[in-house]
Length: 165
Image 1: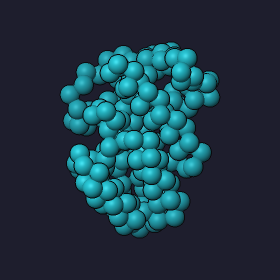
Image 2: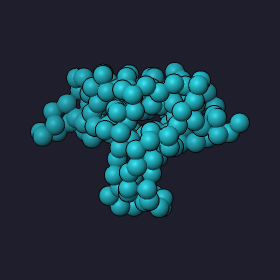
Image 3: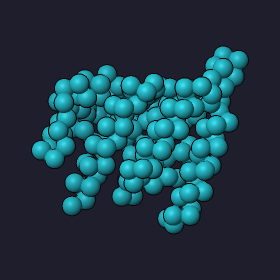
Image 4: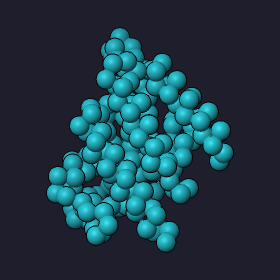
């Protein structure tokens, strides 16, 4: 994908965020998108903004426009990945990140968005049953949650690159 096309896609994603969200939700969503782009992810828009690394899906962002029930709008990030007891000297994972990841595992609710078998999955040494193909789910994350989500995205990039080498 060309750099000009990426710039156009990012501009559209940012415009959508600005239209759908206000306050900290807008600030945090824009910050997360900037982080993903700054780390070499490639944007794509299907029904929602998605980000790939080395042609592998890494993250999906869903925007829910502000309304009377949610005056600042809502957004969530879903992060793909294979975090099966992943340990590597070049990307150390501390216990705090493991606990954060394990607390944010997304269970499958058969939305029809994938055809991935819903079996058992290990995530940093803990076994989960029925995990969604979007392994982690962060609802309108605050800046502290986003820092950990960013680290998980960095790890996902490392896992993808490591698998391709």
